[in-house]
Amino acid sequence: MSPRRIALFGGSFDPPHLGHLHVARAAHEELALDEVRLLPAAQPPHKRSRVLAPAADRLAMVARLAALEPWLAVDERELARGGLSYTYDTLLAVRGELAAGGAELFFLIGSDSLHDLPSWHRAAELVELATFVTVPRDGESLALAQATLAARLPAAAPRLLAQVLAAPPLPISSSQVRARCAAGLPIDELVPASVRDWIAARGLYRAL
Image (cartoon, rainbow, N blue to C red; front, side):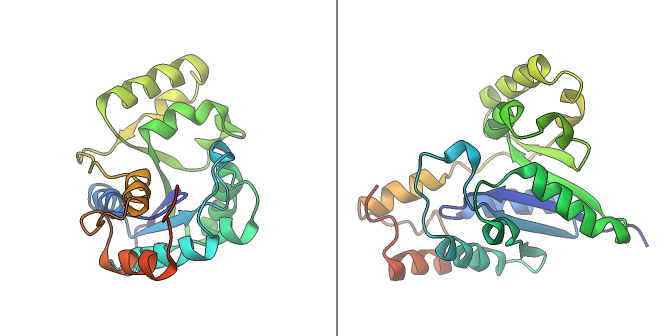
């Protein structure tokens, strides 16, 4: 049997939306993945200044997104660990758990986040823990990420940039969803119905 192919897809998921689902589906198809694990962060180090929705709400919404596909799963480890969510710690832990089965580990990262990667905790070592797959937001952010990595992480840059999803991005963002909620506008075309209903029931994002 060939080893299982598993991808981690992290983020604040505040809230999760159809753009996230689009990325997961594209990665599942293009990389022939067996599983995509949605990995909500407790507190992303690069978003320390922004107050996120409660962890329990974000986890509940991610679970509703994951329920839409049999190959989607939720990994709660960063929420359970609390504090700042460092990708290095997470990848090291997951890699250790998967080592016995010989699974291949992938890490999905947006091109905008890839631009910031040189400032991440133990950034140069991340490429040793998983195969990085870039999710292009647009041509400009991808080009900027390529230039930044070449300048600041030249040894790791070729491997960090080796795989880029071919599927065009779906132009939806969590900030867009939050803004529409705060304005009392519908979000039916931006999030799954189950996530929409959770947001409404919990009164999330009514004010920014």
